[in-house]
Every structure is written in C-alpha cells, then in structure tokens.
Amino acid sequence: MNIINKLPQDIVRYIIPFTYTLQPQCLLEDIRDYSHSLNKLYSVSYAQDHTGSFGRARLLNSLWVFSNYCCGNYYQIWKRMFGIKHKPEIWISNWYAIQPHNYQIRCLWGMFTKDERYSYFLHFKN
Figure (cartoon, rainbow, N blue to C red):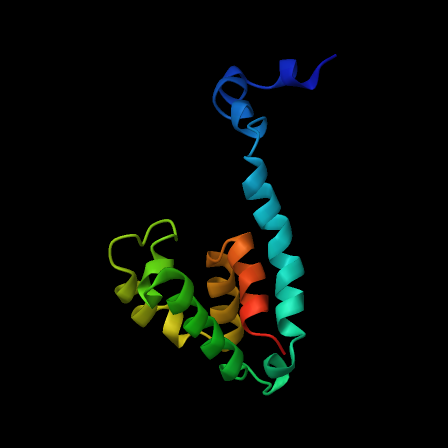
C-alpha cells in the first residue's frame, strides 16, 4: 500500500508538493560548490595566519576587499541575503560584526556566487 494514502489529506495537499519541488540547477551547483570552495579557501596560506575565534583577520579582510571589487560596495553583497535587502548596515552592526571571524567568513563566502568564488581565487593567488 502506498504510504501517501495513509497520510492525512491536509499533509498530502499542502506539504507533500513542497517535497517534490525541483530546485534550479544553478542553485544546486552553488550549494555543492560552497563547501568545496570553503575548504579550498581555508587552505590558502594567509588563511592560516591566526587561530582562535577571532583569528583569520587577514582572510576576512581579503573577502571584504573582494566584495567591494565585485559588487562595487561592501553593503551591496548583503542585499542578496533574504530578509535584509533594505538595511544591511543594521544587520551587520547588530549581529554580523560581533560574531567570530569563522562565522563572518562563512556568511560572506555564502553570499558570493560560484563564479565569484572562482574569481576570488584568481584574484588573490597565494
């Protein structure tokens, strides 16, 4: 017997359609690339300058510089994040800036597209 037939009709009607929704291929490639490229990012020589929760300042600074380079303004890249499109400065000062560097690096790295991540490695060679 099909398991979907055993579920309540509300679940079948309103929740199950979301489980079958295919994601765009470019989004799936971006998700796969994130962890692979993040490992590559942490392996560059200047990423290993410091340790501790607020280490890796040089790597974080290079990401800030690159976001200015590729977006024209540091705050522009944060407008890609869902929910903070209008006032990224508030989110940055109240939440992002007080987090450990590893958190900041992962967030900023996630804002870049797959092509921008590749471009970063070309721009900032070891």
